[in-house]
Length: 279
Ligand code: C2E
Ligand code: CA
Ligand code: CA
Ligand code: CA
Image (cartoon, rainbow, N blue to C red; front, side, top):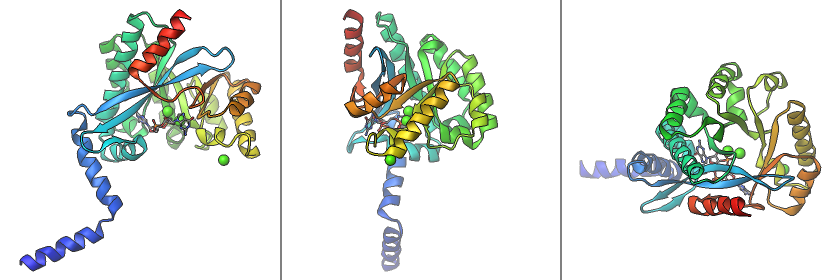
């Protein structure tokens, strides 16, 4: 019986790929991460392109595992989404970002907003309207200082239903941005009706400016489209002076990227806010 057991185990071992084992491990560790307080947020500054003024920041989740150290969001967010853990984690992110933003406002720092990513799975599996409403009420953050980012791919998957949810969210007083724009095959007729304030041009298009003329044409088209719909357009992933100059020429409204700043820990972002205030 012992021999057989070991044989089964070996089969199991080879059957499960390294990837699958890593998934199982991360999922079980994710279950404890909230309780262990292993999450924190970084804040990537967003700037107005022409005047250079600091507008706010996108809150980005960081997981510092007690044994394995930092684990990238691209690795664990998909697992959190599939397992449903994204609901609790997403609520933590929202609440942490809003209470941090409120504390900065109370300390006298001026900024327009903090942006928080909402995952499609989180919207589907929870009462997102109640969650956002509760977090705003609990933290006391005035809703105009919160922006929610939803990916184009998710919005377009069930456009009709999502338009309603987005209208309700906006009725709370928060603003909405379409994340990773350009990758999700928006139907133009829906785009016109989407209750959004901002388009975020996906990093994949910005990345190869000025080498890739197709990406430059797409970026130009998104800016023209966004502006004709009276939306603010932000380019993400700006890494070089050439990219910034190209975007500036096209009257892109806002920028975010390593050229301006990497995501910062809360204290470093506070220092940036402080400079803004006293400059
Ligand atoms: P995203 O929403 O598109 O966030 C922007 C990502 O691009 C961030 O990666 C940021 O660090 C990175 N980035 C910003 N500027 C540059 C640049 O100039 N060059 C390059 N190469 N990268 C740049 P990060 O923090 O690793 O997050 C990756 C993704 O994980 C996010 O993509 C988002 O989809 C997801 N994510 C992060 N935090 C959250 C969260 O709180 N909730 C949810 N649902 N998803 C999150
Ligand atoms: Ca985002
Ligand atoms: Ca994005
Ligand atoms: Ca490209």
